[in-house]
Length: 139
Image (cartoon, rainbow, N blue to C red; front, side):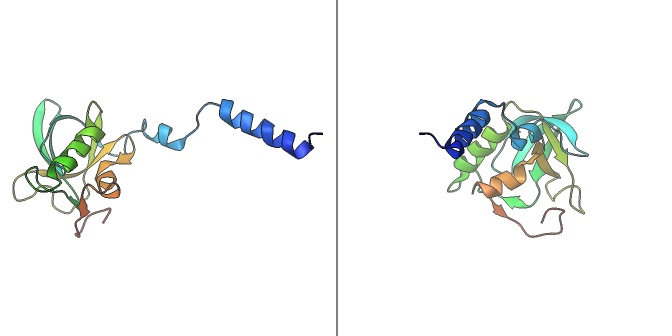
């Protein structure tokens, strides 16, 4: 004999398995970051700096708040490859968040977003960069 609680459990499992995905992460990836400047990635130098095209001009971007190894350093290729994987073929948004707009090398200091995901934070969370202390928005 089948108990009613077992039938209920089976119905719930079937309903969840057959329902369309409502994963909030799927929706967030489609939403642009607030107040972002749209850009296209032209080149990834390493795990924390990229070259982008914005309205027909080329800009070099240094990602705020993180430091990744240089391409010729230990784990440098891994960090660069990770960033390429996060950005390749995707539209990005750039957001300022630092009291200084450019660094000593003339690179714009920005948070990089794919949809609503902060890629600077993703590099940290996935172990491809370390955090830098400083006076920036998401310190």
